[in-house]
Length: 389
Image (cartoon, rainbow, N blue to C red; front, side):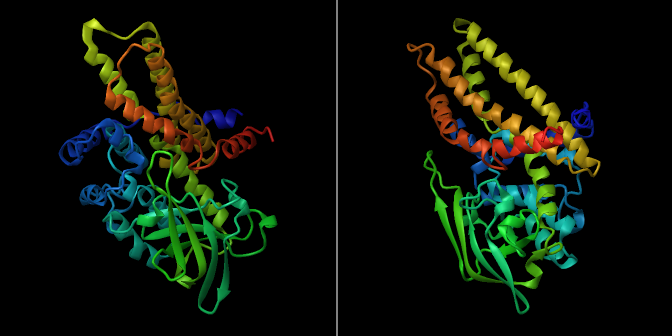
């Protein structure tokens, strides 16, 4: 247990990131569309290619990727600052989000020189958008039980199967998918590989899935005898499990796992301030603000501590799972607790924009503990990390 807890030793963002933060804030003032809170609350799901291209002009898509590929050659601390500012402002990041966070770094680490030269400049220019093919029907977060399979055929591979809950596959150009290339599902982690799939290939069918909020950002993707050339394989054949677990450390540890409800929280506090002296925060409201701020502060420090590990070149998989589990619990608590404090006074007339924002977050919040791995899967990983199983 001490080894795991030691990973969360206090770490601070370098002072050099302060100037970068001011640059990002200035960029947002100039380029972010003016939108009400209920639209900005969709930041994760805000698909705006033009906004992504404006970021790319600054080198801020693929911000940690080398400058030779069009990135900014910045470290994970700078990416933390960038993501924190984007999410707190409610900027639309969905178009480039996954390629910047994990697809690009994955290709950089495991891809061939040809793959790096082909894909990374497109990612950094916001010209190639990626999605992730991990979850499957009847498998969910149990990635080791995937059924989607590739088989050798001539100079390439033949792909069949399905992926589900794939974010914005219907708008993306490529998918990086975890598939079985050897053995059977009973082999679990053995025999899995990762492939880059061009979603325009014959045999690929993408079906958007509409959620409770009316949005359609998830998709189901089917592969019917899709032919993949040899250069679609990432890294070593059969090494997919090692690669995907390293990739998930990027997905689970960042500020995106604690700020999904921050626009709602900020707008609620703005509404309280607008009441001024005639209606300052009640005791219950003040207590709730304190609860939110203390939880958010602790989670932010934990996330920075994991970022420090990433900067050192580590792959803190278990620590990232802990941040993700606690972070999504916080994100889900914000709309739920705000509903309670607003409903405590039936005679109050809450701000309509606040109500719309809270309604959206209440509908979408259950997905926070699904994306990136369910709570049950994460807690199993944490238990193993603590030596409890």
